[in-house]
Amino acid sequence: MPQNKYLFPLILVTSLFFLWGFAHNLDPILIPHLKRSFTLTTVQATLVDSAVFIAYFIMALPAGFILKKYGYKTGIITGLLLFAFGAYLFIPAANTQQYGFFLIALFVIACGLTILETAANPYISSLGDPESSTQRLNFAQSFNGLAAALAPIIGARVILTKGASDETLSKMTEAARKIALATEASSVKTPYFVLGSVLVLIAIAFAFTKLPEIESGEEQATDKNIFQTFKHKHLSRGVAAQFFYIGAQVSVFSLFILYATKSAGLTEVKAADYLGVGGIAFLIGRFIGTFLMKYFRPADLLAIYAVINLMLCLSAIFLHGMVTVYTVIAICFFMSIMFPTIFALGIKNLGNDTAIGSSLMVMSIVGGAILPRAFAYIGDAAGNIQLGYFVPLICFAVVAFFGWKGHRTNLKLINAVAPIL
Image (cartoon, rainbow, N blue to C red):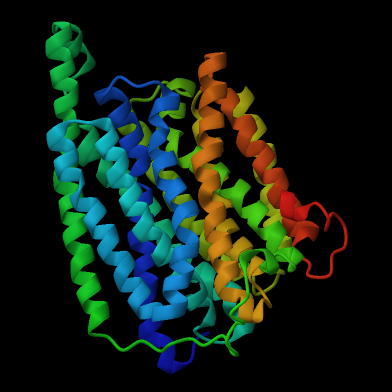
């Protein structure tokens, strides 16, 4: 546990995990909302995820350089302000009623989130005993789980309930229907304005709070480059595991509402409520997982959870009715420890390469831009969104291997191909 001098910084930085978790978990609400408002296919709707997670890939290394040159505090404030600016962009996006403008706003938000996550994850890991870094990061990420529980429930009632019913829309002329659907996009203005204002206030709070700077030790050599960091094979495999895990997580959460309306015949708002239950399961899983790490090695727990989720994916593919909803909620529970555990194991013992390693781990979040689209392509092509769960199934198999053997710093197996993965 952190020393007393680290307690308040730990609390303050932990709040960031809730904030970006809330933003991310509004995306599953935006996907069916914008899909309906702009009459999109499932694949087109997943551009919401693509806009968000491509930003992680583009901004991860610049975020690392910002932290190295200006420090964690400046990086956090920069990330918060960029996050707020993106939230405010939802107002002109709604006014112009352009899908592309929404994607730009989401991209800007994600650029801010990239800086925040690049800073907050290693910062939390460093605030205390290195031996408890994985447990500490899981605790902080639990508040991300709290946001995952609250955002869909709140977002559904603020955003999804504002439009005309399908029966009303069916009676309209085509022109009137398009206007009505496009106007629904305006329901996002108030929640994102409030979110942006809260972020500005928190950025001001950070500006007036003294935070300890975390030093990694010796200065990195000036000729150090990103490719040299791949000499740490467990980092290479961690980047691959995180890529596939994020792809699985985004597929499960972002497409939950579309999945549940088809597999169990739920309404969108009811499906959003069950997504909130999934968020609660995710939160409980974080706390239970953090507790279990006192008795089990994090890597072993990661492998076990991944194998369980692999089997649950088969149920999500082949079963029907409410059991599929409960199955996906169970997947949320067992996903709970994966991101922070993979992150902590991937950057463990990197020394002077920790900052770049952290950036690489954040870059791997681009899996959330790519794999959900594969999920959607399978669902659209087959006319059955349940078949998309073959994508998370493969992802959890990769995570299981990382927890079983891939995290080991002295592992020689597949070292030659790990950077390619």
